[in-house]
Amino acid sequence: MINTDLLPADKDPMGAAIADYFRHHKADRLRVLSSLFDEDEIPVRELFRTKRQMPLLERTALERATGKILDVGAGSGCHSLALQEAGKEVHAIDISPLSVETMKLRGVRNVTQTNLFNEQFADSYDTILMLMNGSGIIGKLEHLPHFFRRMKLLLRPGGRILMDSSDLRYLFEEEDGSIVIDLAGNYYGEVDFRMQYKDIKGDSFDWLYIDFQTLSLYAAENGFKAELIKEGSHYDYLASLSIQASPQSS
Image (cartoon, rainbow, N blue to C red; front, side):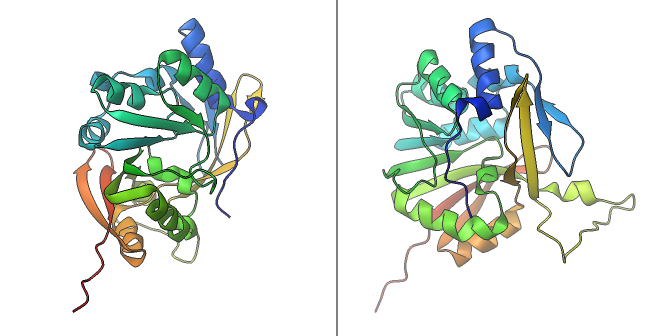
C-alpha cells in the first residue's frame, strides 16, 4: 500500500536536521541506514543550496517549470525559493512538519504539510516537480499505476510532471562490464531506508529508483508519455511525463 501518512515531529529526523541548520547554520550528521547498503549520510548544508549551486538536472527542471507549480517533497524549500525568485507561482508540500515550519520561516509563500497521495489533497497544477530522486516517494514499482492515477487528478490539461531519478544498475556491474541482476527478486531499484538525526529515529520507508526504460513502459501502460530531457553524470536523468492525448474518434 502506498504511503499516505504525515510524519510526527518525533519521527522526523530530516526535518530536525533542516530546522537545526536554519537556526544555527550548522547541523549534526543526518544518518541514512538501509538493509541493502552501508551507512551513509546526507550533507545537510546541501539541502540549502541556491539555484547556482544545484546540479544541472535540477536547474533544467526549474527553468522548464511553468504555470502553477507543485513542489513535492520540498524539504528546506530551496527549489520553491528559486522558483519564487524567478517570479513563478509555486506550492510547496512535504510530509515533514519541521521542514514545513522552516520553509515558512525562509519565505516560501505557499507551503502545506500534506502527502501527495492523500486523497483529501485536491488541487490542479501545470507542473508537478519531483526532484532529488523524486521518484523515490512512489516506494515500489507496483505502486506506479496508483501514482499515475493520482497525477491525472492533479494535472491540468497540457500539464506535466518533471521528475528525476537514477538507474542503480551500476551497483550490479561486474568487472567485465556485465550486469548481474536477480530477475526473480524484487526490482533492483527498490530500496528501504531509515534516517536518524541525533536521537531522533525515523521509521523505515520504501524508496524507488527507476531506470528510464522501465518508467517509460509503465507511463505508456497508464496513459502517459515519458520524455528523456537530460542525463546526468552518474546514471541519473530528468524526465518529463505528460498525459497522452486520447485518439480522436472518427
